View: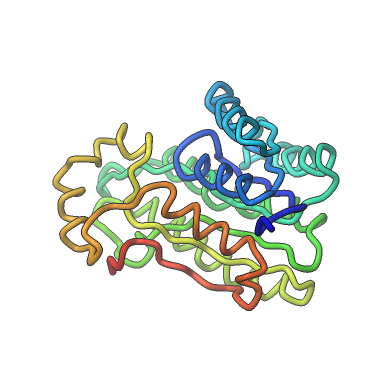
Length: 248
């Protein structure tokens, strides 16, 4: 039997990259999936098309996770379409590396609104519907551990996600809802390619520091998300799972 048969999931920021891979993997294991997007409807529709072509169930839902109204609408769409909610993957995020002298108020607030406030608002909305056995999966980052130069704002947001994961595991634990975080290292996605990371000196340095000798692929992260969404991880909550091929 599929690991997630009968389950319903919301994956934020799921039109591409890690989010798209997670949405596809959850659907492949039997979950009905809301593929959330903020602006890339065409890409989100393509993810839904791949899922349905493989026999899965999915729907694309637009929404900005940093808006309380939108966060609630994303979750409500899952319940209206599929009748329940069991899994929330907080994947929406932005990143921009800049040295201290280039940090701006606008960049700070954009990062924190999406990467931190978005996690809180979407989880707040989801918690009204999640029942016993529910799973919240945050997508953090290894940067909160390795703190690379030029990443003060982004790393601060992911450190906040680490802390939120611990706090919400305590708050929601009595309701038997689990909250964990996957903290990827460098992953080859549309975003990391556009940012110029792939093939860069930073890329080569990351590979050199990674015992498994390569950077990650979206499917590497998606398989961990399936595990955290399933009953196989039923005794895990409040955990930060570094998913970086052994990079520390």
